[in-house]
Each structure stands twice: as structure tokens, then as C-alpha cells.
Image (cartoon, rainbow, N blue to C red; front, side, top):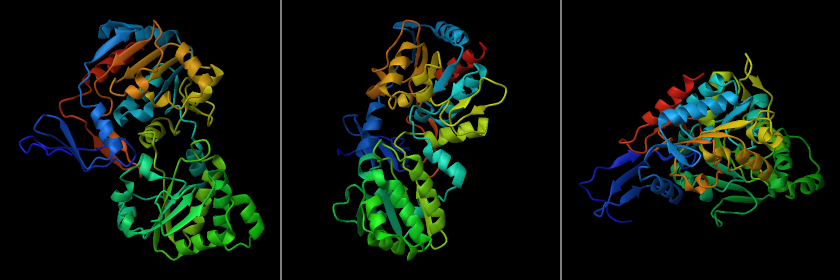
Length: 420
């Protein structure tokens, strides 16, 4: 890494590249004027590099550039014609943009959802059972053991081990492979398809129930003595943390897995302070859940077309609505709504009219969205600045560059809301 020019001021920032939200990042400039990122991991550095150049704000109707007045008028006409519009993509933007999205959904009597990710099981499980969680500060300062369950932080959350001082704690890995290369104090090789059975086994052992060893081996693929050792090891600690990953066979744990996890953790807290955190690669989803809950009473996929908000689990989810072709227009706040979609849902998404508030600093998905002639695109310098929720639901302010602001987004949204 080149030496930073000491005459250049150091800019402290919070990195929103993953749900760690590292708050010790410093950006300076070297002698040639190139940015130098202190403390940033590879993923964070890539995130900042993509957003260093200021993208000029602009408005487009199809491929044609227009004025703000033309964009507002076209967007209002598009949404007024729609019988059931969908507002989505909230997980890729700051809390302030999420508030704007909910307000717009109310004005146009549409449906608002977080993104296209089908993983809502964690919400449902903890609505039914409850959960035991903590801050990263408690993991760092109090946890004596850290359990990584089907989660490899080296790929998606590269500084999590460092930030939580895991090297000074007992480390247990449960999953398909030992990503620690032998550094873990204990490793249980588990096929993610058997996660729910493994958690049910741990729950039963914590409740001191008698289990058939052959049944345990058949349902989990792991001898019962390894699960007994894990439960005993956890019970010997004063405090332990569990990080649950999204590394299931379909990219995320299933409903039964989250249910069993919640039940096991509650049972374990009769013996040890055990809490769970869920590192999320999807950006600002926890903040979006909070915004929707505060405004509608429900954490995701809410129908605002009636007098009272409607919630029916996955009935109003982005993927479901597009698969069934039940919406006829989309307001898109970020590409987080697009990337997880199935091929069938994506084809219908490409066909229907869209209003998109986007930034070209996210090339991994921006160029992949099909533009129709009547689609409205508002190209904004920065949709990231604002409050983001860390994986422990602690809010941190993200400000990529003090010279940037979101006035163009506020102007466009306020002008659009006045049309309804």
C-alpha cells in the first residue's frame, strides 16, 4: 500500500460493504492523488474504489436524457396508470431513502418490499419464538467462545474475526469444511442440508433428552458424541456467540433451520449466555425491516393499497409478485431487488414499466437492467449516505464523501410525491 501524503486530510468513514459496518476506515491520498484506504478489507476497498468518481446527476426517459420536470411528469404518469405498483430494493440504500420509499408506496397505493431475496424465514421464526441476540461489542468483550454455524466470514465479512477478537477466544466451526485451516479448537463436518436436524439434536441434548445414536447419525451425518461434546463445551462457558450463515443448499437456511435454532438458543440460555447474530451479505436489510415495522407494523412485503396495511408472509414478496405477474409497475431503489430474482421473475421484471433511482457506481448490476422506452431513470451521485444497520442492529451513519449530498434525490422525490 503506498504511503499517504500527510498534507492530505484523512477522512474517517464507515464502510457499508457488508453488515460488519467497520467504523475505523480512513481514506487519504498518496502523493499522486490516488486514494489510500486504511484498515479496509479487499471487499471494502473495492466498494470504495467504485464510488470515488462523482457521477453527474441526470434524468432519463428510456435512453433519452430529460429535465427533472420531464422525469417527474413521466414517472407520475407511469405510476398513476399502474393498477398495482411495487416499490422495492430498499436493502441497498440508507435508512433515509427507505423512509422515502415507504412514503411513496403509500401515496401510490402500492406494495412495498425490502428486496428480491426469498429468505424471510428468519423474520418468521423470531416472530413466533423470539430470539437472543447481542451487540458486536459483547462478542468482542465478553464472549469466551465463538461458534460459526455454516458460515465462512473470510469470503463475505473479511474483518469480522479481527473486529471481534476471535483469535483470543475458543473457536468452533460447524459446516461443510474447516475454513480456518485447522486453527479452530473444534470442527464438526456438517452437510448444510441437515442443519435443521443437527440443531434439533443440540436442542434435545441441551434439554437432557435421551436420543438414539443411530438415528442421530442417520439424520445429521455426524456421530452423537460430537454433538454431546459441542453442547458440553458451550455449557462450560459464561458467554458464547453464534454466527449463523447463509450457506445452506439454496444459499440460505430454511424455515425449519431457523425455528430449531431459535428453540435451541433459548434452551441453552438456561445454562449459558448464548446469543446469535446473522451476518447479512444483502446490505441494509435490518434497517429496512425496522423502517417497515415502524411505519406499517410488519417487517417486509406490505400491501398499502387499502386503508390498513396488509401482510401475508410471502404473498406480497417481490419474487412472488413478479412470478405471478400481479404487479404492473416497479419503483426500484437499488439492484438488491434484481440480483436474487429467478429467471422467470426477472423476465417479467424486464417487461413492465419501471421508475429507477440508481447510481452508476454499482456496475455489477446496473448495465444488466433492461430499459424500456417509457422507463424513468434518475441517475444519482450517491444513495448510500445516511444511517445503516449493522448485523447487531446498531445504527451507524455512512457518509462516503462530505462534498456529496442527496439534494437531487430529495428534490425528485418531493416533486414526485406532490403529483399524488
